[in-house]
Amino acid sequence: MKRELVSIEQVQLGGTVITNVRAGVADLSLPSKGRVPTGSHIELNAGHEAILGKEFLERSHAILHVAASTQNQAFAALLMLCRETLGMDVGDLTRTIRAKRGERLPTVLSVEEVRRVFEQMNGTLRLMAETIYGGGLRVSECCRLRVQHVDFDNNTLRVLGKGDKFRTTLLPERLKEPLRQHLARVRALFDRDRAAGVAGVHLPDALARKYPNAATEWAWFWVFPSRTLSLDPRTNTVRRHHVSDVPVQRAVREAAANAGMAKPVSVHTLRHSFATHLLLNGVDIRQIQELLGHRNVETTMIYTHVVKDLRVAVRSPLDIL
Image: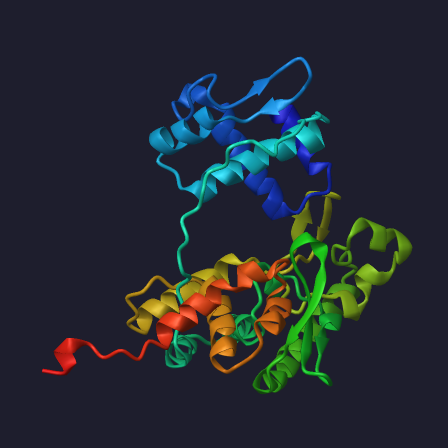
C-alpha cells in the first residue's frame, strides 16, 4: 500500500486529510494484524467498482470495537484512495450501507465556565482559545489565519473553512488590542525571516503561480506562526509553518481540569459554546449557520436542542418538599 500512499500526497491534499487517509487505509488493509478479517473489508471486481458492504461495517464494530464515526472515516479514506489515487470508477454507492451515528448533544460550557477556563490560560494559547470562542472557529481555522484575514475596522475574521471555502465571522471588540499587540510581535518574527532569507509561507498552488512573491509578503504571513522552521514535505523547502493545533488543544483540556470541571472539555467545546450562547441571546439560527460555516442548517439545528434543555424551567419535586 506504500506506493499508493505516496500518490495520495501528490493529489494536493491537506496534511490532516493525508493523515486520515493513512489511518483509514491502514485499518482496512492490514488483516494480518487481526484488526479486520480478510475478505470482509473490500472487494475489487473486474469493473473496478469498490463494494463496501454491510459485513465490513458489522465486523469492524464487533471486532475493532470502533464507533460509527470511525467506521465512516475508514469508508471515506478507502473511497478517496480508490477515486483519487488508483483512478477507479467506484460506481453507484447510493445504496451502500453506512454506519449510523447516534444523536448526541455536544458538550457546552456556560458563560461562567468559559470565563473560568480562560482564567487558567495565558499568552498566545489563551489568545487562540479566545479567538476560537469569540468567532466560533474550528481549531484548524484558527491555526491557519493569515494577517490579511483580520479586519480590525469591521470587527470581522475571514476564515478558510472546510472545502477551502471562505466565510466571515466575528472579531470580538475585546480581542482587538491583544491581537494588535500579538501581531506586533509576529511582525518582528516576520522581519527576521525576511532578513535571514527564509522561504516564504506555503500558499495554494494556483495562488503561488499567479503571485510568486506573495509568499514573502506580510499580508500572507500566519497570525499564529510556529516558533521553529520546518521542512515542507510538499516542496522540500524549509519554511515557517503555522502553529500546530496540539498545544492549544492540550492547554484547553488542562485549563478545564484546573478549573475543576468534571465534564469532558475540548477546544471544540468552545465552538459549541459560541453557537449555543448566540442562540440563547436571540441570534437567528440562519445567521449562526453562516458564522459556523455549516453547509446545511440541519447541522446547526442541534444547538436548538441544547438550548431547549438549558431553558427547562420545571422544578424538581424534591425542591417542593
